[in-house]
Amino acid sequence: MLGLTDIKTGRTILHNGEPYLVLSYLHSMIGRGGAVMRTKLRNLLSGVIIDFTFSGADKVDEAEMSKSHAQYLYLEGDQYQFMDTATYDQFFLTKESLGDMMQYLVEGTEVSILNWDGRPINIEIPVKVTLTVTDAPPGLKGDTASGGDKVVTLETGLQVTTPLFVKTGDRIIVNTEKGAYVSRA
Image (cartoon, rainbow, N blue to C red; front, top):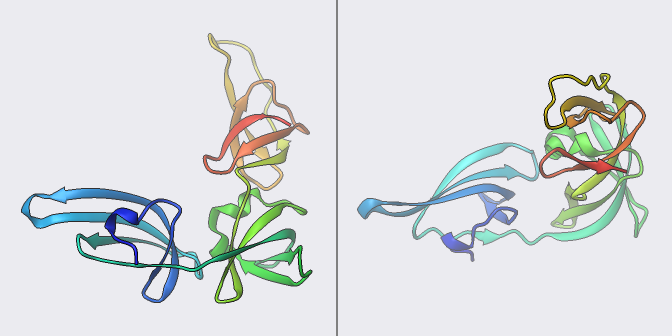
C-alpha cells in the first residue's frame, strides 16, 4: 500500500481496479482540512487521462507490472504491431493506449513492454530516438543575433524546433520526454 507521499510521477498504481500511470502530482495543505494530492493519471488500458484528488489518509495499491523487450514492426489501421524479442510472439496496441508515444515509433524501434496480468498493455520508449527530417524550410540568415530556430517535420509527422542548419534528409536525435531536438545523429 502506498501512502500520499509515495505517489510520484512515473509510478504505476491501481485505481478502481485498473492500472494507472501517474503523469503529474501536486501536494498541498488546506488549512485545517489536512493534506491533499492532486494528480493527473493515465489509464494504461484505455489511454484516458483523468484528474483525481487523494485526501490525507488515502492509501492506494501499487500496480504489479513486469517488463519485457519488444520491437515495433508496423502500423495496420489503428493497431501498432509489436514482437516480443524473447518469445517472438506478436501483439498489437491501439493508438488510444499509446497516446503521444506513437509520434516516436519507426519500424524497428526497440521498446520496453509493460505487462499486467500476463498481457502487454503499454510500452516505454527510449529517452532519445533518432528520426529523419522529411520537411525543413530553408534556414534564412537575418535578424538572428544569437543563432536562430526553425520548425521541421520528422518522418513520423512530429514537428520539432531545430537550429537553422538542419535540412531535409538529416537524421536528428529527439528527446521523447520533452519532444525537443537534442543533436544531429
